[in-house]
Image (tube, rainbow, N blue to C red; front, side, top):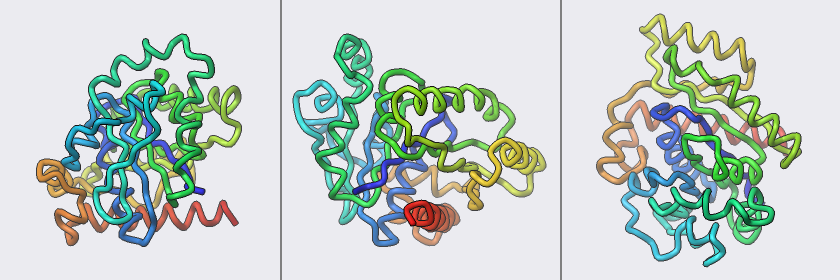
Length: 253
């Protein structure tokens, strides 16, 4: 059964979608089968991988018009795409019974086919995000190593605690990912220190360095490994993926 992980931060521009794509691709590089779910109405994950508009997206699945229909990007890496139509899903599903569990029920059909299911959450804390958290075992929080990125961490933790208490007892914060890191900047080092005080050993040892190749890869509709396997971004996300496998394997044991 695939381990379901949500990447969540209600602040935009912290490297959430970049991390979802490249953690998924990094796990594939390490021999794992991965399903990415683009749960953001902006569809940045789908666009970044150059996936054409699909007849059946996550929007149709949530509305009960189809099952999850993965699109194969490359061997071992599948994506359930998104669409701008998803922006209306919260209002459309508001009266649905068990609306927080729709995604979980959809995943039950396909998760056996994968080692990891990674959900790219929208930058909000609404019904779509609740569906992701209710479906997940772990939440990973990508956090830009800048002062403003620290704001709202308490709110994120409160939401996760509420979901665990009311909807999903197995949910926990599996890790915090420091992104856009430059060791030469005192501020970046100070922010990481602050994050470690707040989250302790849940902060991943691998920091994602500020790297131009990570910004260039989406413009070429590629993950970082397909775009430039020798770049610092590829090395960092491969190291992070190894760390994820080690951490999740320890828990499973």
